[in-house]
Amino acid sequence: MKTIPYEDIKARLMQKPEVRAEYERLRPEFELAQTIIAARALHGLTQAELAARMETSQSYIARLESGRVLPSMRTWQRLAAATGTRPKVTLEPLTAVSPLPGCPGTVEESP
Image (cartoon, rainbow, N blue to C red; front, side, top):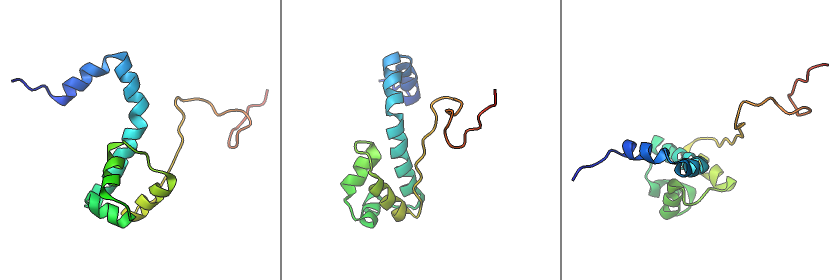
């Protein structure tokens, strides 16, 4: 039986517009899960150890890391405290767009 590398399968699937659209829709959730995994791994913690520090269950950590549940801001803060990090939430423009007129920090041109 021939095995196909994951990267090849993903490349083929990503050629389908509906698959690419769903992948992009879910990207923020997967990135959030990856951030949680990276913070835990950075400190050499198991899911159970992180759960104990956060006073929650290992199964909840597993759900966070799989992307099945999204953390609340309170959970995000507890996760940061448990991993010796600080939470940071940002909003980024989807495209390079000029700031809206009248918004703080916007320099408006004179006519």
